Amino acid sequence: MIRVLVSGAAGRMGREVVRAVLAEDDLELVAAVDPVHAGEALGEGSDLTVGDDLASAITETTPDVMVDFTHPGAVAGNIRIALAAGVDCVIGTTGIPADTLDALASDAPDGTCLFVAPNFAIGAVLMMRFAAEAARFLPHVEVIELHHDRKADAPSGTALRTASLIADARASVPPAPGRETEVAEGARGALVDGVTVHSVRLPGLVAHQEVLFGGQGQTLSLRHDSIDRTSFMPGVVLAVRSVGGRSGLIVGLENLMGQ
Image (tube, rainbow, N blue to C red; front, side):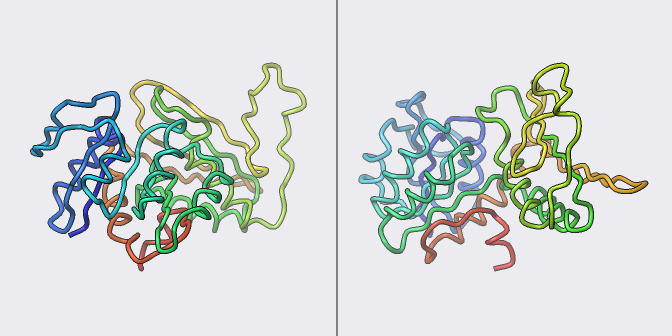
C-alpha cells in the first residue's frame, strides 16, 4: 500500500484527488490537510478530519507521498516540509519558478523525489508532444490557453511547458509581427521562450489549450480540452505510483508514461 497525504484536500482539485486515491486498492489516504477547512469532516466515504498543519500531519501519519494542489504562495513551503521528512511529492500546483524547484530538490534528502506536472491529463501531455514535433516543420506558432476565472497564475503551467518544448524543438525563432504597432498594450500576448502566448480567464471553463501553427498556404491546430477535473486523475494516480524509488526533480508526466 502507498500511503498518501493530500494537501489542499478541500479544494476543487484536492477533492478529486481524494476520490481518486480512495478508489484505488493499492493507495491508502492517511491524511488530508487544508488550513481553510481545518476541523471539518473530509467526507467522500472517509472518516478523516481535515487538518491544518502539514508538518504535524506528516509526523502523525507517516505518508509515503504528498499530493499538493494548493496555491503558488503556499506550495514551496509545503514541498520543503514534506521533502525534509522524506516524503515524495507529487505537485499539481503551478506558478512555481524553475529556480525554486531546483533549490527545493537540491536541498532534499537523498532518495526523495519531487515530481511536478504542468498538466496531469494524458491528452494534454500528448498535445504538448505533438506540438514539439510540429514545431520542427512549422516554426510559426502561437498558444492560446483558456482556464476558469479563479486560476491563480497566467500563463498556465501547461502553456509555459508547451512554449519550452517548442523552443527546444524548432531550429530558429521566426518574427512575430504586430507587437510594435499594438493599439492596446498586450494585445499580441506574452512572449515565452520566443513563443506568443495568450491567456483567457472566464467562468465556465476548466482547462483548455490550442496551439496554432501557420505555414505557407496552411495552418495546423492542436487542441486539448479538459471538460471535467476527473481528466487529471489518471495522471495523478500514475505519478503517485511512480515516484517511489525515484529521486531528485522530475518535471512533466511524459517522463513517467510508458515506464
